[in-house]
Length: 234
Image (tube, rainbow, N blue to C red; front, side, top):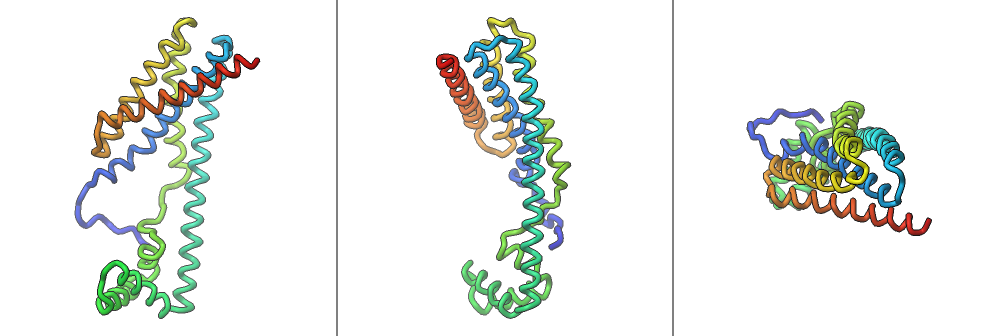
C-alpha cells in the first residue's frame, strides 16, 4: 500500500496536532512525574539532598523508559501491520472472488447499493487489491513509516525537558521553600502546555489549560499523600 499525496491541499488541525502531540505529552509527563516525585519524597521527610539525587535518577530513568516504550510499541505496530498484510496477500492469491465479495459487502454496509458496490469493489481490486483491503477491511489507511528510534529520541528529550524544570527549581530553591515553589510553578507551566496543545488542536484554550493543571495537581496531591502515609508508618 503506497503513500498517496494530499490531492486536496487541506491542512486539517488534526494533522498539525499529531506533529506536536508527542512533544507536549512527553514534556507534561516529565513535568508531572518529577514534581510528583519531589512532592512525595519531601512528604516522607527525606533530606533535600537525597530528594535531589532521586529526582536526577528519575529524570534519566523516566526519559529512557519512555523512549524504550515508544520504540517497542512502534516496532510492534509495524510488525503487526506487516503480518496482517502478508496474511491478506495470501488470502487474495488463494480466493480472490471471496475477497472481492468481502469488499463489496463492506461498501453495501456503508450505504452503497449492491450494483454500485460491486462495480466499485472490482475497480478497487483491479487498481490495488491489497491496498483496498488494507484500508477498508483492516483500517490501515497509511502504514506506519516512522522509524522507531527516530520517534523515541524526541519523546525522551521532551520528557527530560519537562522534568528539568522542577529539578532546577529544587536545586536552586531554599530547602524550606522547595515544595512551596515547585508546586505552583509546575501548575503554571502545565496550564501553559495544556493551553498550547488545545490551541494547536483548535479546542478550548482555557479548558485545555485547566484540565492539564488539574490532573497535574491531583497527581502531585496523591503522591504527596502516599509519601505522608509512608512517613507515618515508618
